Amino acid sequence: MTVDNPRRTVGAGPITVSRWWEAGLDAVAVLSVIVVVWRQPGVLTSPAALAVLIGVSVAVAARRRFALTAAAVAAAVSAAGALVTSDVILAVWVLAQVCLFSVPLRRSRAATLGAAVALAAVLFTDAVVRTRVAPLDPVSLALVGWTTAIAGAGLTLRAQRDHMEAVRRQADAAIAARNSEIRRRVSDERLRIARDLHDAVAHNIAVISLHAGAAEQALAGRPADAREALREVRGASRTVLGEMQSILRVLRSDADNDDAEPIISAATVPGLIAHFRALGVEVVSDGLDLSGLEPAADVAAYRLLQEALTNAHRHGTGAIQVAATRANGELRLEVSNRVQLRRSGGTAGFGLIGMRERVNSAGGRLDTKHEEDRFVLTAHLPVTHERER
Image 1: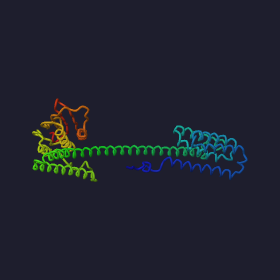
Image 2 (image 1 turned 120 degrees about the horizontal axis):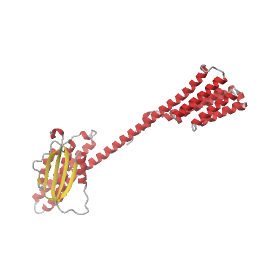
Image 3 (image 1 turned 45 degrees about the vertical axis):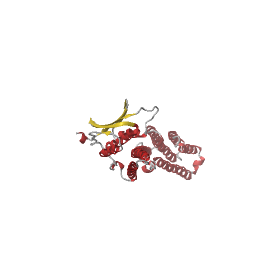
């Protein structure tokens, strides 16, 4: 199964957007240096101007790795440049702002605020001292506003990046939860299919085996009994094929299987018991009332009795006792029979495991125990509120 990449569903990557912004500012920085050199060729012959221009250019080149240090160096070079030369001061201011833009993308908001205040103070002092404009002159105030805008733009881009990363983490978590739920449902469905196949096949195969053996013994001297046994084999074969086809129809259906009508239910238990009695099994089930069960418990009750009666017939001796009582909002279904001595080292088969899983999935519980020479299986199944009242 494939799922969409959450990074495709969220939108353009914020890291990519940041890189585009910084690439654009790289172009601005390069263009500023080219313009100042082209318009003032004497910069290349002025050691002070060249040193200032090179110093702030190195800061711009290193700002991605050392953002705060580059901003501090650019501010310091701007202050020194204002004292030694005015030829390149405007380009230096531009390059310093480029360094400042990278700070909020890589460092904390407090570090950004400190760098912005320091650079604004340097530019404001340069404007007031060197150009001798008034402190409230639009030029000096524009430099402060320019610095504030650059820092604000970087913080906004950082906030957008943090938000997009949070959205991506949410999307990753949601997809992981959905995939986990899908895997859980697939696992549950596999267990349900395994239980249905076992319940549908095991009982009828046992019946087929029993009657096939009877037919083999009666074939020579009692042809009528042999024919009867073969008819039972044919009937059991049709039954197991019908149940298999019903399960396959459910698997092939596009509809929600949980809403489909159950293949069997507790209402068909009398027919199940009659079938065992026809096989010669003594089943005592006077006054057995399984009505009013929850839908999942309704199916579980039938499958539980089918498996329990099959096991009792194959491994037990004597009559099989089946009883049902109601108390505290649940139905207590008990199946007991005499058994031979247990073999040491035996392990529980899939039938008992499947019964326990089915009862648990229906909201009930299953208990098994040996009482002297009897095996007792007890299921507690939930009933509907209407039936309980």
